[in-house]
Image 1: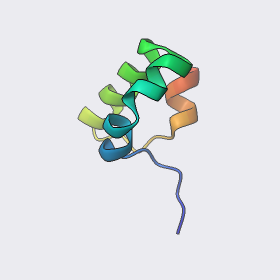
Image 2: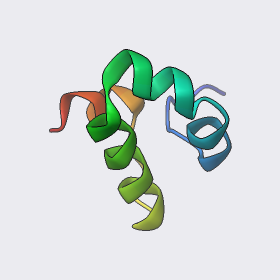
Image 3: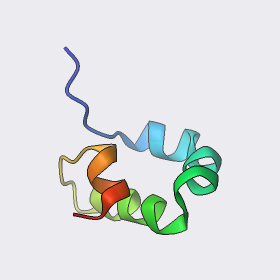
Image 4: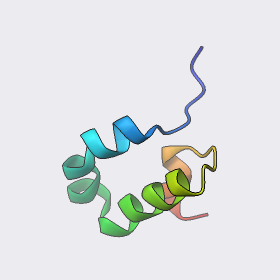
Length: 49
């Protein structure tokens, strides 16, 4: 089942791609969501909402 929720594996494995394509701020939002254990999508991290 595809849920679209980010995982720590994907955030750290693809960190260079995320930073170069969307910026450090988006990557940090993903990391903060992981630390807080918030189920969120990558799109929400990129948009910052």
